[in-house]
Length: 71
Image (cartoon, rainbow, N blue to C red):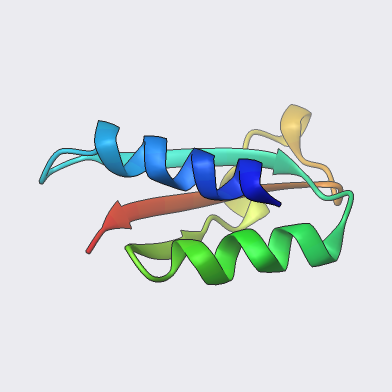
């Protein structure tokens, strides 16, 4: 799971004070997603966009869309 920490480190370096990141991912492994989100919460505020707000062609129960803002 070191690659997740590498991703978070890279995201932290790319973020400016007014940066908002939309991060989409396929739900395949709950343990990996939970690990990533727990680690990300140390440096980011995290929200999830409800699929009712997505275009109907792109809705899927296997995909999630998060919004990350640096703390």
